[in-house]
Length: 301
Image (cartoon, rainbow, N blue to C red):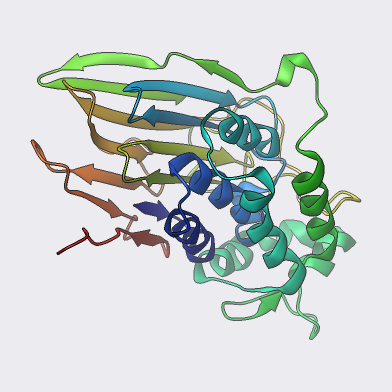
């Protein structure tokens, strides 16, 4: 099961699951792909956090990389819970950046609404304008050669850099008992509390009952509006408002995983819902956006 704000990245996660990867593998691949296909909200410099439910161990943890970058955070997620080799998880996003991808409606809307911040940066214009010198629109094809080189290095050498103070941190998430189960919450308040864009969330679940819910943020759409010499769009630094939740039954089977505050979020919400007393689950992307949701059919049905 997958629900995300951008379709191409969602399809990459789908392919990872189909190839035998678990929820952590697919979530890692999805987050890296978003750095290519939705950098307005999720470049490799984005800050973020994830909730991870291990279906086999029946445990739930929070991963906080709100002071670091998504490259390091996603590597930490994969290092602890991933099953596929790291290069295999990184390769799809590298391929997108190197050989091109079609701009989705989700990214085109961000470019149209907030792309003006990029006009003062020559590297950004090179990355996000077509050869005809107009800002990319839905259906246009973009390549990002410099970012592809960074992803190749990431694939070969893993994510390094940064200090101890901004290293990804694992912790026990907030939890409250509810009738028949528990709800785990990740709520990181910050300067972007009122923001409705410049961030993205996604959820992934696998057939082993594991699930990952992640939120990534640039601080505001396209972050600082500056692409560095490595081809990475830079995020706004500062405390980011990030929120996700995950519910389990009394026996620790998954009941839901969501990004955003379901009752009141002005942001796009992506969710996996599981029927009570069964293992039948469904992924749903927010109908207010142009995202992607996929639920594999139950074998035999």
